[in-house]
Amino acid sequence: MSHENKYDQTIFADYALEHFLRYAVIGTASDHCKEETPSTKGQWELAKLLVEEFETLGSIEVELSDHCYVIARLAASGGCEQADTIGFLAHLDTAADVSGENVKPLVKEVDGGRIVQSDGSTLLGADDKAGIAIIMTVAWYLGVHREIKHGPLEFIFSPDEETGRGLPCFPLEKIKSKACYTLDGGPLGELETECFNAWEANAAFKGRVIHLGQARGTLANAALMASAFAAMLPRADSPETSDGRYGYYCLTDIKGDLETAELTVLIRDFDRARGEDRLAGLNAFARAVEAQFPGGTVTVKSKVQYVNMKEKIDRQPQVRGRLLQAAANLNIAVIEKPIRGGTDGSRLTELGIPTPNIWTGGRNFHSREEWLSVNDMAAACALVMELIGLWV
Picture 1: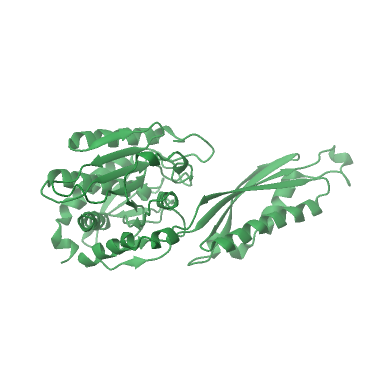
Picture 2: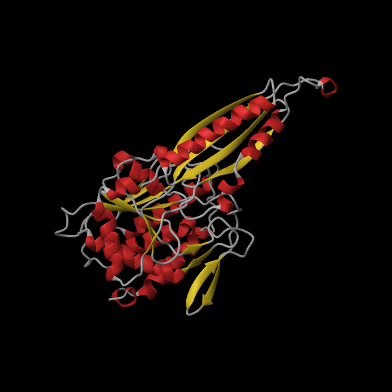
Protein backbone atom coordinates (compact mmCIF):
# COMPACT_ATOMS: atom_id res chain seq x y z
CA MET A 1 0.00 0.00 0.00
CA SER A 2 1.53 3.34 -1.00
CA HIS A 3 1.60 6.49 1.07
CA GLU A 4 -0.69 8.11 -1.50
CA ASN A 5 -3.66 5.85 -0.76
CA LYS A 6 -3.21 4.78 2.87
CA TYR A 7 -3.51 8.40 4.00
CA ASP A 8 -5.08 11.37 2.29
CA GLN A 9 -1.89 13.12 1.28
CA THR A 10 -3.78 16.21 0.14
CA ILE A 11 -5.01 16.83 3.67
CA PHE A 12 -1.50 16.41 5.08
CA ALA A 13 -0.04 18.68 2.40
CA ASP A 14 -2.59 21.46 2.80
CA TYR A 15 -2.40 21.53 6.59
CA ALA A 16 1.40 21.31 6.74
CA LEU A 17 1.78 24.06 4.13
CA GLU A 18 -0.65 26.34 5.95
CA HIS A 19 1.30 25.98 9.17
CA PHE A 20 4.71 26.27 7.55
CA LEU A 21 3.77 29.57 5.94
CA ARG A 22 2.65 30.85 9.34
CA TYR A 23 5.92 29.87 11.00
CA ALA A 24 8.26 30.96 8.19
CA VAL A 25 7.53 34.68 8.59
CA ILE A 26 8.65 34.68 12.25
CA GLY A 27 12.34 35.54 12.47
CA THR A 28 13.96 32.93 14.71
CA ALA A 29 17.65 32.98 13.74
CA SER A 30 19.78 32.00 16.73
CA ASP A 31 22.87 33.96 17.78
CA HIS A 32 26.08 32.04 18.46
CA CYS A 33 27.57 35.07 20.21
CA LYS A 34 25.05 34.90 23.05
CA GLU A 35 25.34 32.39 25.88
CA GLU A 36 21.75 32.45 27.12
CA THR A 37 19.12 29.94 25.95
CA PRO A 38 17.26 30.89 23.87
CA SER A 39 19.65 33.31 22.25
CA THR A 40 16.98 35.36 20.43
CA LYS A 41 13.49 36.71 21.14
CA GLY A 42 11.96 35.37 17.94
CA GLN A 43 12.25 31.82 19.25
CA TRP A 44 10.01 32.78 22.17
CA GLU A 45 7.45 34.17 19.72
CA LEU A 46 7.29 30.94 17.75
CA ALA A 47 7.26 28.80 20.91
CA LYS A 48 4.30 30.72 22.33
CA LEU A 49 2.43 30.36 19.05
CA LEU A 50 2.92 26.58 19.16
CA VAL A 51 1.65 26.46 22.74
CA GLU A 52 -1.49 28.32 21.62
CA GLU A 53 -2.01 25.90 18.75
CA PHE A 54 -1.67 22.87 21.01
CA GLU A 55 -4.14 24.40 23.46
CA THR A 56 -6.74 24.77 20.70
CA LEU A 57 -6.52 21.01 20.06
CA GLY A 58 -7.91 20.45 23.55
CA SER A 59 -6.69 16.91 24.12
CA ILE A 60 -2.97 17.67 24.47
CA GLU A 61 -1.14 18.75 27.62
CA VAL A 62 1.53 21.36 26.83
CA GLU A 63 4.15 23.32 28.76
CA LEU A 64 6.76 25.95 27.91
CA SER A 65 9.96 25.76 29.94
CA ASP A 66 12.08 28.62 31.25
CA HIS A 67 14.55 27.99 28.42
CA CYS A 68 11.95 27.96 25.62
CA TYR A 69 11.37 24.23 25.27
CA VAL A 70 7.86 23.33 24.19
CA ILE A 71 6.83 19.88 25.47
CA ALA A 72 3.40 18.56 24.50
CA ARG A 73 1.99 15.20 25.57
CA LEU A 74 -0.82 13.20 24.05
CA ALA A 75 -2.09 10.41 26.29
CA ALA A 76 -2.41 6.91 24.85
CA SER A 77 -5.68 5.91 23.27
CA GLY A 78 -7.81 3.34 25.08
CA GLY A 79 -6.12 -0.02 25.42
CA CYS A 80 -2.66 1.31 24.45
CA GLU A 81 -1.62 2.72 27.80
CA GLN A 82 1.17 0.19 28.27
CA ALA A 83 2.89 1.00 24.97
CA ASP A 84 6.27 2.73 25.07
CA THR A 85 6.23 6.51 24.92
CA ILE A 86 7.86 7.88 21.77
CA GLY A 87 8.68 11.47 20.89
CA PHE A 88 9.05 13.68 17.84
CA LEU A 89 11.41 16.64 17.89
CA ALA A 90 12.09 19.73 15.76
CA HIS A 91 13.98 22.94 16.47
CA LEU A 92 12.66 26.49 16.68
CA ASP A 93 15.67 28.41 15.42
CA THR A 94 17.05 28.98 11.95
CA ALA A 95 20.68 29.50 10.97
CA ALA A 96 22.18 32.98 11.03
CA ASP A 97 24.43 32.35 8.00
CA VAL A 98 21.88 34.18 5.82
CA SER A 99 19.22 36.62 7.01
CA GLY A 100 16.01 35.01 8.25
CA GLU A 101 14.17 38.27 8.87
CA ASN A 102 11.18 39.38 6.79
CA VAL A 103 10.95 36.04 4.98
CA LYS A 104 8.51 36.17 2.05
CA PRO A 105 7.57 32.57 1.17
CA LEU A 106 6.51 31.94 -2.44
CA VAL A 107 4.39 28.88 -3.29
CA LYS A 108 4.79 27.51 -6.81
CA GLU A 109 3.29 24.61 -8.78
CA VAL A 110 6.04 22.35 -10.13
CA ASP A 111 5.56 18.99 -11.90
CA GLY A 112 2.18 18.33 -10.35
CA GLY A 113 3.28 19.29 -6.85
CA ARG A 114 4.00 22.41 -4.87
CA ILE A 115 7.23 23.88 -3.63
CA VAL A 116 7.91 26.81 -1.32
CA GLN A 117 10.87 29.13 -1.68
CA SER A 118 11.86 32.56 -0.43
CA ASP A 119 12.03 35.61 -2.67
CA GLY A 120 15.82 35.26 -2.75
CA SER A 121 16.61 37.98 -0.25
CA THR A 122 16.55 35.65 2.79
CA LEU A 123 16.67 31.99 3.62
CA LEU A 124 13.32 30.19 3.74
CA GLY A 125 13.54 28.56 7.16
CA ALA A 126 12.61 25.05 6.08
CA ASP A 127 15.38 24.03 8.47
CA ASP A 128 13.53 23.39 10.68
CA LYS A 129 10.11 25.00 10.42
CA ALA A 130 9.16 22.27 7.96
CA GLY A 131 9.81 19.76 10.77
CA ILE A 132 7.63 21.80 13.13
CA ALA A 133 4.83 21.93 10.55
CA ILE A 134 4.98 18.15 10.06
CA ILE A 135 4.74 17.46 13.79
CA MET A 136 1.88 19.92 14.25
CA THR A 137 0.03 18.30 11.32
CA VAL A 138 0.35 14.87 12.95
CA ALA A 139 -0.84 16.24 16.31
CA TRP A 140 -3.86 17.82 14.63
CA TYR A 141 -4.64 14.66 12.64
CA LEU A 142 -4.59 12.49 15.74
CA GLY A 143 -6.87 14.99 17.47
CA VAL A 144 -9.40 14.77 14.65
CA HIS A 145 -9.16 10.99 14.17
CA ARG A 146 -9.66 9.72 17.70
CA GLU A 147 -10.25 6.21 16.32
CA ILE A 148 -6.53 5.82 15.51
CA LYS A 149 -4.75 3.68 18.08
CA HIS A 150 -1.54 5.10 19.51
CA GLY A 151 0.62 4.90 22.60
CA PRO A 152 1.75 7.88 24.72
CA LEU A 153 3.32 10.56 22.53
CA GLU A 154 5.56 13.56 23.18
CA PHE A 155 6.02 16.46 20.76
CA ILE A 156 9.11 18.53 21.56
CA PHE A 157 10.42 21.78 20.12
CA SER A 158 13.88 23.02 21.12
CA PRO A 159 15.78 26.32 20.82
CA ASP A 160 19.28 27.07 19.53
CA GLU A 161 19.94 23.85 17.63
CA GLU A 162 21.95 25.72 15.02
CA THR A 163 24.42 27.03 17.60
CA GLY A 164 24.59 23.75 19.52
CA ARG A 165 23.73 25.56 22.76
CA GLY A 166 20.16 24.42 23.30
CA LEU A 167 20.62 20.87 24.52
CA PRO A 168 22.68 21.71 27.66
CA CYS A 169 19.43 23.15 29.03
CA PHE A 170 17.28 20.28 27.77
CA PRO A 171 14.76 19.25 30.46
CA LEU A 172 15.63 15.57 30.25
CA GLU A 173 13.93 14.79 33.56
CA LYS A 174 10.58 15.74 32.00
CA ILE A 175 10.91 13.45 28.98
CA LYS A 176 9.38 9.98 29.12
CA SER A 177 10.12 8.85 25.56
CA LYS A 178 11.95 5.57 25.13
CA ALA A 179 12.87 6.67 21.61
CA CYS A 180 12.57 9.93 19.73
CA TYR A 181 12.71 10.96 16.08
CA THR A 182 13.86 14.32 14.77
CA LEU A 183 12.13 15.85 11.75
CA ASP A 184 15.15 17.73 10.42
CA GLY A 185 16.26 16.09 7.18
CA GLY A 186 16.22 16.68 3.44
CA PRO A 187 14.55 14.97 0.45
CA LEU A 188 11.86 12.28 0.44
CA GLY A 189 13.06 8.95 1.85
CA GLU A 190 16.13 10.35 3.60
CA LEU A 191 16.63 8.64 6.98
CA GLU A 192 19.71 9.16 9.10
CA THR A 193 21.09 7.25 12.07
CA GLU A 194 24.68 8.46 11.90
CA CYS A 195 26.23 11.93 12.15
CA PHE A 196 29.55 13.69 12.57
CA ASN A 197 31.52 13.89 15.76
CA ALA A 198 31.84 17.62 16.32
CA TRP A 199 34.20 19.92 18.18
CA GLU A 200 34.55 23.69 18.43
CA ALA A 201 38.07 25.02 18.96
CA ASN A 202 38.93 28.58 19.93
CA ALA A 203 42.45 29.90 19.44
CA ALA A 204 43.56 33.03 21.32
CA PHE A 205 46.64 34.96 20.16
CA LYS A 206 48.60 37.29 22.42
CA GLY A 207 51.09 39.52 20.66
CA ARG A 208 53.80 41.86 21.86
CA VAL A 209 53.27 45.50 20.91
CA ILE A 210 55.77 48.33 20.49
CA HIS A 211 55.91 51.48 18.39
CA LEU A 212 56.05 50.39 14.75
CA GLY A 213 59.11 52.54 14.19
CA GLN A 214 60.96 50.39 16.73
CA ALA A 215 59.32 47.08 15.84
CA ARG A 216 62.27 45.22 14.34
CA GLY A 217 63.03 42.15 16.44
CA THR A 218 60.40 43.02 19.04
CA LEU A 219 56.89 43.24 17.56
CA ALA A 220 54.72 40.11 17.57
CA ASN A 221 51.60 41.04 15.57
CA ALA A 222 48.63 39.08 16.98
CA ALA A 223 46.44 39.73 13.93
CA LEU A 224 49.18 38.37 11.67
CA MET A 225 49.66 35.39 13.99
CA ALA A 226 45.96 34.52 13.65
CA SER A 227 46.24 34.84 9.87
CA ALA A 228 49.24 32.54 9.80
CA PHE A 229 47.40 29.99 11.91
CA ALA A 230 44.38 30.14 9.59
CA ALA A 231 46.61 29.62 6.57
CA MET A 232 47.87 26.34 8.08
CA LEU A 233 44.38 24.78 7.98
CA PRO A 234 44.55 22.24 5.14
CA ARG A 235 42.53 23.40 2.14
CA ALA A 236 41.97 19.77 1.17
CA ASP A 237 40.23 19.22 4.53
CA SER A 238 37.60 21.95 4.31
CA PRO A 239 33.80 21.75 3.88
CA GLU A 240 33.97 22.96 0.29
CA THR A 241 36.49 20.28 -0.73
CA SER A 242 35.04 17.25 1.11
CA ASP A 243 31.95 15.08 0.95
CA GLY A 244 30.78 11.57 1.82
CA ARG A 245 32.54 10.28 4.90
CA TYR A 246 35.41 12.76 4.81
CA GLY A 247 35.71 15.21 7.69
CA TYR A 248 37.09 18.73 7.77
CA TYR A 249 38.32 21.84 9.53
CA CYS A 250 36.23 24.98 9.08
CA LEU A 251 37.34 28.47 10.06
CA THR A 252 34.15 30.31 11.02
CA ASP A 253 35.41 33.67 12.26
CA ILE A 254 38.59 35.61 12.90
CA LYS A 255 39.22 39.01 14.47
CA GLY A 256 41.97 40.91 16.19
CA ASP A 257 44.53 43.70 16.30
CA LEU A 258 48.22 44.06 17.04
CA GLU A 259 47.94 42.93 20.66
CA THR A 260 45.21 40.26 20.69
CA ALA A 261 43.34 38.16 18.17
CA GLU A 262 41.09 35.14 18.18
CA LEU A 263 39.49 32.71 15.80
CA THR A 264 37.10 29.76 15.86
CA VAL A 265 37.55 26.48 14.03
CA LEU A 266 34.95 23.73 13.75
CA ILE A 267 36.18 20.15 13.44
CA ARG A 268 33.96 17.44 11.99
CA ASP A 269 34.64 13.74 11.40
CA PHE A 270 32.63 10.52 11.46
CA ASP A 271 35.58 8.77 13.10
CA ARG A 272 36.24 10.07 16.61
CA ALA A 273 39.95 9.18 16.56
CA ARG A 274 40.48 11.10 13.32
CA GLY A 275 38.70 14.09 14.80
CA GLU A 276 40.96 13.99 17.83
CA ASP A 277 43.94 13.87 15.48
CA ARG A 278 42.64 17.08 13.91
CA LEU A 279 42.48 18.66 17.37
CA ALA A 280 46.09 17.64 17.93
CA GLY A 281 46.89 19.28 14.60
CA LEU A 282 45.54 22.61 15.86
CA ASN A 283 47.92 22.48 18.82
CA ALA A 284 50.80 21.74 16.44
CA PHE A 285 49.81 24.77 14.34
CA ALA A 286 49.83 26.88 17.52
CA ARG A 287 53.37 25.87 18.37
CA ALA A 288 54.48 26.57 14.79
CA VAL A 289 53.00 30.07 14.94
CA GLU A 290 54.75 30.78 18.25
CA ALA A 291 58.02 29.73 16.62
CA GLN A 292 57.42 32.19 13.77
CA PHE A 293 56.49 35.07 16.09
CA PRO A 294 58.90 35.20 19.05
CA GLY A 295 57.26 36.79 22.08
CA GLY A 296 53.77 35.84 20.95
CA THR A 297 51.66 33.09 22.49
CA VAL A 298 48.82 30.94 21.20
CA THR A 299 46.29 29.14 23.39
CA VAL A 300 43.88 26.61 21.92
CA LYS A 301 40.81 25.48 23.85
CA SER A 302 38.26 23.01 22.49
CA LYS A 303 34.97 21.46 23.49
CA VAL A 304 32.83 18.62 22.16
CA GLN A 305 29.61 19.84 20.53
CA TYR A 306 28.04 16.46 19.77
CA VAL A 307 29.07 12.87 19.03
CA ASN A 308 28.19 10.34 16.35
CA MET A 309 24.82 8.85 17.33
CA LYS A 310 25.28 5.58 15.41
CA GLU A 311 26.75 3.46 18.22
CA LYS A 312 23.93 4.14 20.70
CA ILE A 313 21.18 3.81 18.10
CA ASP A 314 22.66 0.45 17.04
CA ARG A 315 22.26 -0.80 20.63
CA GLN A 316 18.46 -0.52 20.28
CA PRO A 317 17.83 -1.90 16.77
CA GLN A 318 14.03 -1.64 17.03
CA VAL A 319 14.32 2.16 16.89
CA ARG A 320 15.81 2.08 13.39
CA GLY A 321 13.98 -1.13 12.45
CA ARG A 322 10.52 0.33 12.98
CA LEU A 323 11.51 3.41 11.04
CA LEU A 324 12.52 1.27 8.06
CA GLN A 325 9.38 -0.84 8.42
CA ALA A 326 7.17 2.24 8.36
CA ALA A 327 8.80 3.38 5.11
CA ALA A 328 8.43 -0.12 3.61
CA ASN A 329 4.74 -0.24 4.57
CA LEU A 330 4.22 2.97 2.59
CA ASN A 331 6.37 1.86 -0.38
CA ILE A 332 8.75 4.75 0.21
CA ALA A 333 12.28 4.10 -1.07
CA VAL A 334 14.71 4.76 1.77
CA ILE A 335 17.93 6.73 1.39
CA GLU A 336 20.16 5.97 4.38
CA LYS A 337 23.24 8.13 4.66
CA PRO A 338 25.28 9.78 7.40
CA ILE A 339 24.45 13.38 8.23
CA ARG A 340 27.26 15.76 7.35
CA GLY A 341 26.29 17.74 10.40
CA GLY A 342 24.28 17.07 13.52
CA THR A 343 20.81 17.47 14.95
CA ASP A 344 19.34 17.80 18.40
CA GLY A 345 18.92 14.06 17.98
CA SER A 346 22.69 13.69 18.15
CA ARG A 347 22.77 15.19 21.62
CA LEU A 348 19.56 13.50 22.75
CA THR A 349 21.01 10.13 21.73
CA GLU A 350 24.10 10.95 23.77
CA LEU A 351 21.82 11.66 26.73
CA GLY A 352 20.30 8.17 26.45
CA ILE A 353 17.29 8.53 24.12
CA PRO A 354 18.10 7.09 20.66
CA THR A 355 16.93 9.63 18.08
CA PRO A 356 17.22 9.00 14.32
CA ASN A 357 16.42 11.72 11.81
CA ILE A 358 13.58 11.85 9.23
CA TRP A 359 13.31 13.93 6.06
CA THR A 360 11.23 17.12 5.86
CA GLY A 361 11.49 17.89 2.15
CA GLY A 362 13.86 20.86 2.42
CA ARG A 363 16.77 21.52 0.09
CA ASN A 364 19.74 23.96 0.01
CA PHE A 365 19.54 24.65 3.74
CA HIS A 366 21.13 27.82 5.18
CA SER A 367 21.07 29.62 1.81
CA ARG A 368 18.97 32.08 -0.16
CA GLU A 369 18.29 29.22 -2.59
CA GLU A 370 16.56 27.12 0.10
CA TRP A 371 13.29 25.50 -0.96
CA LEU A 372 10.78 22.97 0.32
CA SER A 373 8.70 20.23 -1.31
CA VAL A 374 5.15 20.19 0.04
CA ASN A 375 4.64 16.62 -1.21
CA ASP A 376 7.72 15.48 0.72
CA MET A 377 6.32 17.12 3.86
CA ALA A 378 3.05 15.24 3.38
CA ALA A 379 4.91 11.94 2.92
CA ALA A 380 6.81 12.60 6.16
CA CYS A 381 3.45 13.08 7.93
CA ALA A 382 2.36 9.69 6.60
CA LEU A 383 5.60 8.07 7.76
CA VAL A 384 5.20 9.48 11.28
CA MET A 385 1.63 8.18 11.43
CA GLU A 386 2.79 4.73 10.32
CA LEU A 387 5.63 4.80 12.82
CA ILE A 388 3.25 5.67 15.65
CA GLY A 389 1.18 2.62 14.76
CA LEU A 390 4.20 0.32 14.75
CA TRP A 391 5.15 1.40 18.30
CA VAL A 392 1.74 0.45 19.75
